[in-house]
Image (cartoon, rainbow, N blue to C red; front, side, top):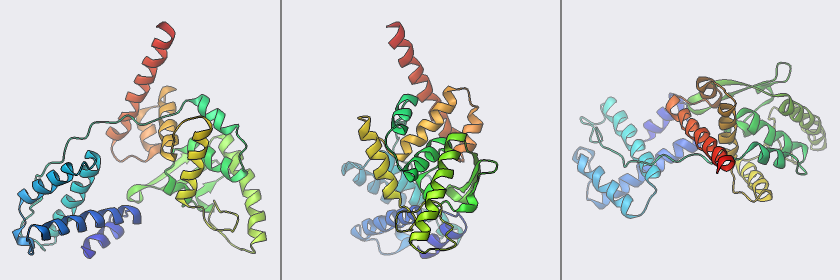
Length: 284
């Protein structure tokens, strides 16, 4: 397992959070095998995966979570087989439960405007503007360094899942919010006697802001408009609003950093759904 986790980090370039999830999935399956009195890998057969999947379903585990767990195991056993740690791949051909497509939650442009009009600090305004203007994931946003933002041409350069590079244009409101924040950031650095700090978003102590801070901040904004939202809601809204205004699906795919356009196509269903809601609201 250690070899596999190293492979995920070095060759696949996956984040530490994703690798930890893979590790937990594999350990849970090993624990299950021990309960089945399986102590040697050569004795693992496809039926063990079927029993394991059924057990997860009986525990009312979300189908999407089960699908992820099975995907983790498929990747692990494929790796072991390829490295000849196993002579056979017992996970070959196993199926995951069907996951119903869930439309991502989005907020309207009016809601975005309402949240922007609340009393935000320069840090909060820059974070919110950047999330909505670029569709960045939270991990990408908190990991930004100064060299990732070019305010001369207004672009943001990040590395998403699988270390895939993407360069996203930055609109004028977001660029201005970032510029205003960077001025205040200098004051924070001086107060904390910090030099040569490369991290973009820092708290009052000069430390990089956390994912938890961003989630808490966005959740509080949602409460102000009586809605439950997360940073991912802002990402979904970014993509949906672009498509509603005629953006090409491939362009949105690149901006979001999706490896598969099928993932991006889900947003077209959101746009159609909202189009119907507007139509019937007007025409009854």
